[in-house]
Image (cartoon, rainbow, N blue to C red; front, top):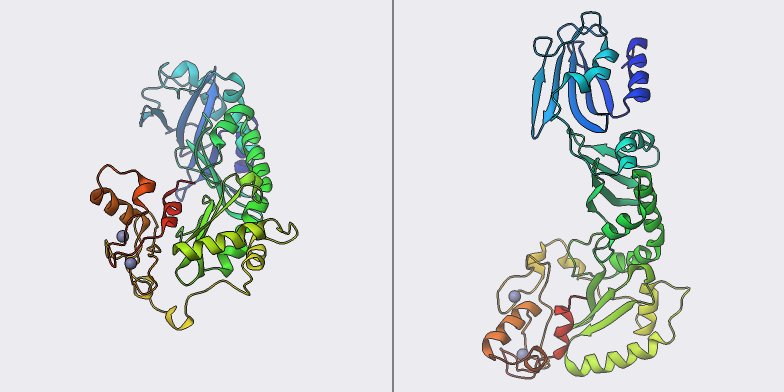
Length: 382
Ligand SMILES: [Zn+2]
Ligand SMILES: [Zn+2]
């Protein structure tokens, strides 16, 4: 939109019809699209004006259910001296009453949301995108939180997708305290700030530990599983991302004796947690390590499937759930390595009717020595 006539049109739309935008196509026609509200009813439309500012030859498409219905001078009673403004202002009288988008009963929400959207267009602060039908709005690329996103249905403001941890009840929080789209965005950005320690704590873990689960790691995950030493793994869960250190749960997975010894080391160490240091450094201190085991550098060029040992039950490395085989038995000479889920299934079929914790005291399907009970930690939801 370069000419002053186009600028005037944009200004006119921004002031009177903030849900509509205008562009000029290759053939020189003006195309206006978006949503407009009149008498409490929202309409989604596309308007082609080949001879703007005159209305001659216009085509107006108005959304009716899932389809657009086309109106031209032949089926819409427009006056010959009308210009765009007249057409838009007379739409409620011209169009059949049924063609509007149903919205909620919140009057404030109805009248403000598209004006809100325009006001929230701040490309230097974050990215705002809308789909072609103007029914979804997506915020993304927040400074310091580049991977985060928030997607809502408009004009209902129903939450569609977001990047916060699954355990954060964002939908409920928004319903409780966000009345306008700006409220929603402000609350989301405040939550990102509140979650900074949560993400910071995982940052070094993700970089300096060989995180096996989840894979791939996203902003939604609140657990990490990584090797602590040979056959022994650490599972960290931050139960409440808003209280990252105090709600941290640590589980050691591996052969029974080793787990018992390290559990003592851990509980002693947790008493001396240094709040000045991040989670990674505290864990190194607790386990008296300089670094956590990382994959053999010679092996890192190979694909994951070749580097890693397959599950001895299902013969797969990574399951669809993201789980990798890390459960071993207490016999140091046994080569068994299984997915917790596979072992769980195996026990269930083998020892009919026994409860879960009982069966986890069972024997290794390979060497018949005692199986470590710590694998139960991998099956917990938390
Ligand atoms: Zn398996
Ligand atoms: Zn075994």
